[in-house]
Length: 455
Image 1: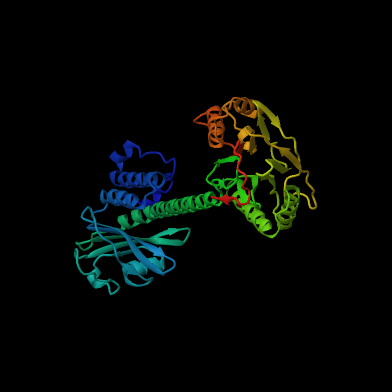
Image 2: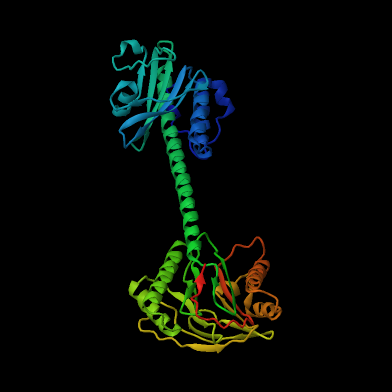
């Protein structure tokens, strides 16, 4: 038989060509060896489950090399041991529990010396470690699995017959070892990626729940006010936020913000803004323009590059039905009165961009039946498959059709439903959608001495 080193010119990875049928007739042993290497090279790119991969490799090798026990041990860098991860005896998988340090036993010696060990009779080799139970081995072939000289593990074949393994087997498994090493490394990286993705998904789910817990549902003890909020993040975590704050007897503050960008960083920045607003309110419940100026100062001092917040801050006084508001770059609030939709044109620089920014303030005397809509730009910019935005015109038409019987909750739900219908069921959202709806009722309660209760 010709030396197996002469087959080195054959491509074995990726797009390797199948073994020509003519070679099986002229050189059957070499053809079988090449076919095995070809099959294993395909496994490298097609199987990422380690157990399944090693089972397939064991089956492929069995067609060429007669063995009684096939096992694979992987190198654990932390424990500095070879650890059994797969074993097959007489075609059946068996438990693998062995741990061996380098240079101990035949497997440890092969790994430590980075070379193949072929032992014709293990009873004559002092390095052999006898294991209780199972078959009694007489010969053994151990192949180190190396990836650019980095130890991945060892492939170990045992036979109950002495002299069971030949030089040809040694050469073939030596060549095969590099492919198995690549396959095992790919499987390890894939498993690590899956575990990282699973861990990240769990952390994102937890973070999303925490973010939702930070957002209130509503407020009680605000006579004459029906209040609702809607919040639909485009991703697991959203950059939009809103908040309700008790602002004295019969007075409620409302905030709606939109952080530049999306995802985790935007969500954390929004949480920072909520926490800062609540801190400022405890120390000094100031009017909307002053609140935005103070918040801008605090956020600018944080010096988070390329991050800013468009935000609306308003205070509703139930005793006078008066709404005082200030805007830092957010979409104009909308007032719905007697079927007409009016934009409250109030502008301002987003928070965190420029130090010392001052903000304008506007006051509106509301009437029973009035509806105020605060919405992030994700509502107006909800786009369909043709990139057509929902827009102010559609939103105004929707609001013009609301009836006196519609609650704030019903109005909020209808806005979100209509933007969903406009975008389509199969369309991925481009931005977070957040809104706060205030409806002034004709309640005539005269007790405005209670602080709002946020829930």
